[in-house]
Length: 224
Image 1: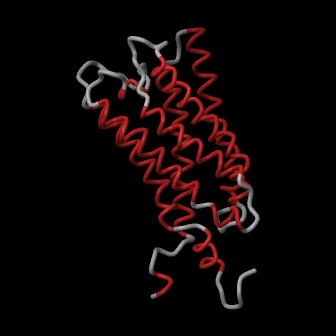
Image 2: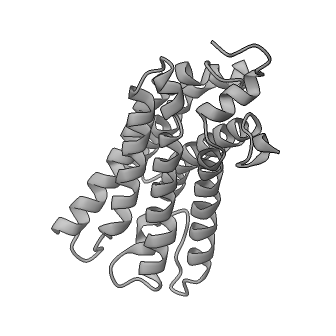
Image 3: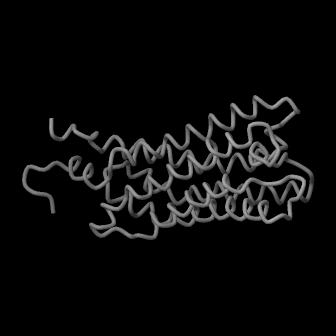
């Protein structure tokens, strides 16, 4: 229970670090910029509609190392940093499951960049490791949403966002349905379905981080 004269905002600031809150929207911006810039640098007809994001970092692709580092590894590590920021709330009685699954999502996203896909040998160990890591990242995040909503209810973020959080699972579900339809009918283009799932992932991260950032106090400000 807060001491007399302590505001809810300052209590939340100690529970959720300012730097961790910033990590989430930074991950989203870094991913979006990486996909946009490295796709634009391709001169081989790369299409967002028909090509997977992983192909930007595929073995032998132009600037593959840079894309994997900036598009997968760095955002993944930032997601881990965001998940670690919930430690204070866990210690005060919140569930470990949500942040734990979210952290695993960040770890596996980073692993997807460490093991690039080989488009010429899709059954190679590196390609399979990439596919497994990318898929696991989405699954871990989707599962985390059901606990993250409850955890966010403990901090001063809008109640509507708390209620909406579990519904973000519809983004990866929509991608699964999208890919199934493409496999069956050849329409719609598969690339947009994958990007829809990533959009939900990073939209939730960006908005949640931005809301938590507004409830925190930057380092040193509380002592001013």
